[in-house]
Length: 358
Image (tube, rainbow, N blue to C red; front, top):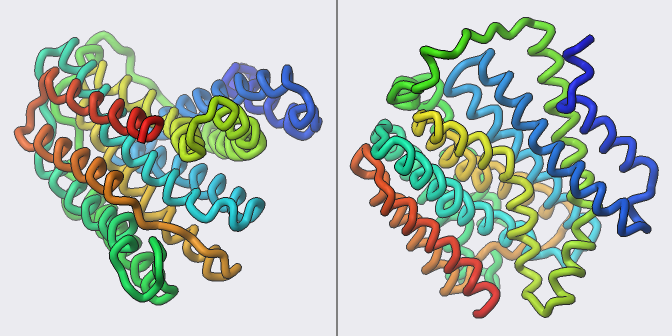
């Protein structure tokens, strides 16, 4: 009974009750409460995903969290596109682009910085990084770069055959990455380095009952995060536009909410000297964010004949290229230091700054 009466189970239930009460739609106070419940539901999702990860082991635990986050992302994007129609034609691109930039520069940068400040240097597996980055670069180019330069359709669009091809390419590449991570080259993705707290910690035994409860409440948490994020997105958009800020910032806010569970888990792992887990989470989520989101959104858009803008402008392509190139160099040596983390965080601030002051 105690496992059912904890904040990680009570908070998402309260959030569901508030959502179905209808009070969020017409009250600023309840929107603030809903925002707080949204954040705590995200943190509860982190807790339940960590319990599941402890039970299933690595790298399966990081895969579960990455795919869970992608489910949130796809659900929010698809629901908003179905609701807003033409007004949301670039939402998938903006959200995926923002998520990629936040992961590569923000989450990886913070992990490298915090880990280096506490442990001076941290080790990780270079082959795992190479596999992930090779897959990521190909997916990024197919989905966010090529549509700007293709000639079949005017503008930053793919034609339907091109969209189908890009979607299949994403699924094939991501599927091969998962095969390498879980089967063929699984040893590359196991934690390198020793958690300094391992000797002090008491081994955690996850019973079948606790595992099932965490699995169910992970779904409950993810579901309410999707619904509350969709409900609060018009308020977020109105706040952003009221300050004369670009509407594309909505994509950053949504991506930030979506990635909060992963960011917390990755930073905690880096702090505990488990940088390999942080890298698995970060690069795995970046791959899932693009490799699964774009095909899912593309399928919906093709079925309902909704146009979708995927191609980035030249400035964004340069910033994305800078981010990928910097991450490649930062993770090429198998060891980290403070400089790499700082440079990546500066890239993130440049991304946000240039969006506000183009």
